[in-house]
Length: 313
Image (cartoon, rainbow, N blue to C red):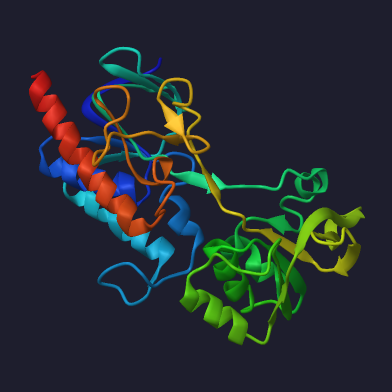
């Protein structure tokens, strides 16, 4: 028999935004329930060194998220390892259905579902996913000790992945459609000074090649964006690092979105187009996408939810 749980505040998602919302929601005596989702801890669990979290010169991403979870739990947040599969925001109390069969009802909801890796959409990319094609260097880099690999992209994610992969690979080729990276200058400087990394400008990936029995990557085909010339390269791993898209599946047909699916919030607020529903972190932030800004929005969302609930009462 399915269980039904009611809470004043339901937090969906468990990255910096979700856990911070839990801390502030608990301090406001809202006794929040936080449902972690498919990736407890969010994107920081798939990174290694985090060097821009205030108070920590350097901290491991997974360790930071474990600390945040423990903090939220210590102040009173009930943290549940479930995945919300359906969310009805048409009436209050709002209703969420968990993969476990549990139904959650709430007076207010904070959405902190974050974002996930983008893919190129190539048929061969899909074919070799998990068998040489990856979007997570920290998850899979270990498997490429002494191998030649490639990273696709030109932003912070791509440069960070390339730098991390030099811990394992014999050579990392960074493939970018232009000749200018969109990453932070400190990261670009590190990349350019690293002897293991070779940038390949004005090229884009058009095909991943490999074996079927067993399934595995042996190389790629890239196309020159200026001349159209196609070049074949040998490599054992392909890391796609072209950014992220918001995890908006639960609300795409219910809340106003923009900029490719990011949830719209009111100016200087986390309030969405439905009163009592708040959005924080990478689900709504198409501009900064930082752990510290996500945490700040989690704080804002909890304070606004507290005010909303008080007004309803």
